[in-house]
Image (cartoon, rainbow, N blue to C red):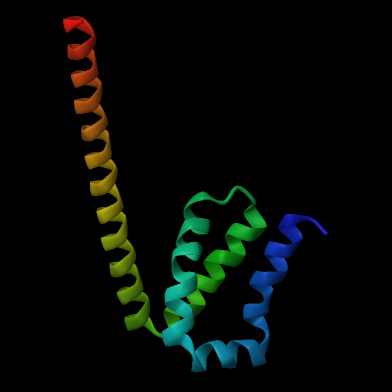
Length: 108
């Protein structure tokens, strides 16, 4: 079984009535865990079937609990912002270190 087939079957679990009922009952725990992966898949996945299934799941969870989805989206945006800020700080630190190393090597 290929990775794509596994991904497709995993997405299709959301169409199983029993699984969907369990997810609905425990959505406060489950949705924050899977939300970032769903967003990542909808933005980056190369396989059209997986992309379509992911979009269907996102639509389904939005209909299930729109407020929770909005909260998850807000949290993801905050995390992305913090990650971008941390990456910028690392970049600036490396630039300072490289500048200091260049000054040191010129002085020697």
